[in-house]
View 1 (cartoon, helix red, strand yellow):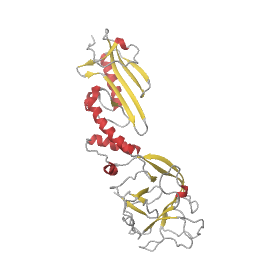
View 2 (cartoon, rainbow, N blue to C red):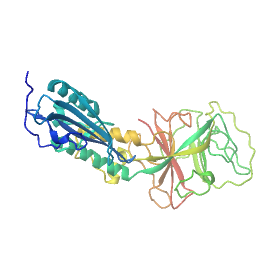
View 3 (spheres, one colour):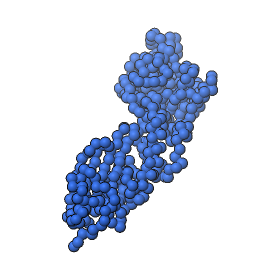
View 4 (spheres, rainbow, N blue to C red):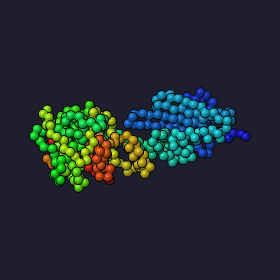
Amino acid sequence: EEEEEEGDSGVSVDSFFPKAKNFHVYSDEDGTWAFSGAQEDKLKNTHKFYIIQLLQHNSKPKQVHVWTRWGRAGKDGQCKLLSEKTLASCKTVFQKKYKEKTKNKWSDRHDFVSHKGSYCPTDDNNKEGEGGNDKVEEVIEKIVENKRDAFVPVLEEDTDGDVFSSKFGGTPWLAKGEEYPKCNDCGVPMQCFVQLNFAKRPRGYKGKNKKGMLQFFHCTANDCCESFDAFDTSCKLVRFVQPTKFVHNIPQPEFANPIKMNLITSWRKKQDVPGWADFSDLGISLSDLNNDQEAMVDEKVDEIRVCGDKLGGWPIWVQDSEFPSCPHCSKAMTYLMQIESNQGVDYMWGDCGAAYLYQCDDHMDTVCMLWQCS
């Protein structure tokens, strides 16, 4: 049976194909059988390419191949020639390879949908898909422009350390003659949830705190002892102190439900990006994206943002973004730290919520805490 012969598609044969001058890119009523794709990660600064072409000999139409080449952008990369006996089998191989690399069917290429970790079209035959992908990449680029350093605590579990250590739970530093902080609602001593000694701050931390200690105490004796207000002190105490070298050996109270002690031994620095709740304040708009493109942005943000307990970075809001105003200057306070449910502190903030610690840049001893839950 004679192979179907079509004219030149107008798309150049990849110059790395050994006999490029003797072949052309196959084209029929379904279009040109060629794909040039890219896979880019702006945060990791990586850019890869992938080329697939169905090639037919200029004078011997039965001689057909599927040619592939791939690698890092700007490099020659690797290549492979997939020879088949018939045009039909070449088309099958081409379509299989296309779906493998793009997660799209060849027949649906004009309604191309980008997928994380897959290649997106860069050639003129797929302008519809490329345009949609450009919009997504533009939004992701704006998000990445606002990246910040986040520091994730490295823990030695069930270890307290000394009273000057940064820690979750355990024995806090207290001033000479100071009584253990008590809940103003029920009168029971409050547990030290977090103590951060900024004299031992993470390397590379760019916050204003070069010394001093942030302490956060919270009542766990009664379920009714809770408050959403950032500055309410009925059942919590948040303070920024300058610890002296004097060690006040006050006995640790016997708590009914003591939280686990976790000593912070070091910090892992990661790059963090904002989430949806902060987009509006940053001038990032999603109004030009459809639902699929919004899902792509959401997927990318979830892939690169830093979750869990962290110092700095961007808070992951359970609800809307929330920055309390300093009671002294009325300026929005700076977010310092996020405390997730049941991580460094084995405590559940409502229904899988999170707590956030803040500090005023102009009044450094003014700190507060609020929490959100779904």
